Image (cartoon, rainbow, N blue to C red; front, side, top):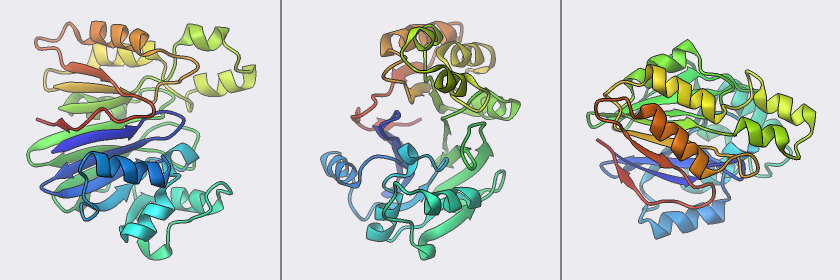
Length: 262
């Protein structure tokens, strides 16, 4: 299995997994033209993407979903409430065609080509919000993004993950001292908002196991965070592992190349 991030942050989130020439998108929140350019630059053939899976219906996760579904003719899997939210979103001119809509339910496994995907609930103020635990080719991969807190269910998947993408959205001191109004700060800090660096670090320090080989930190705030802060905290948090996993901070707007997962 191989993995690439095409964008990770409030400007747009889009991840891609491929196994034996069969590809799936996890979120489609960057512009369609930019996505096509990245696919060409990184050798993703137009015949490779076979499906898309959406975490939730905020625009920075679904912006290109209608265009990609229509142009590639691929199914888009999401919770029923997320499909309704996309239809009601005035910022999305192109909706997902009805024929391409597929419903996801928490705890129900989906088989898609070589991939087995299990959606699970993640607390966030969207219509619904899922993380994904994914297996293919004897390797697993877990995505947890846009979470206000780390739940027991999330911890269970974290402990099993060989490859983990998890949110580090904000530094609490930077957010509190920044220009965001109190109402927005409260929303971000709430149990249905976003994870701050220290909360993610604490969860990894306490619950990560030695099966984890790589941790990617996603959805960093441009205004209220910095990659160097995140990298220092997380590398320290995982350093007690017998074999500490690799730690990578994903870029907000640009890919960093494919990672071969093991």
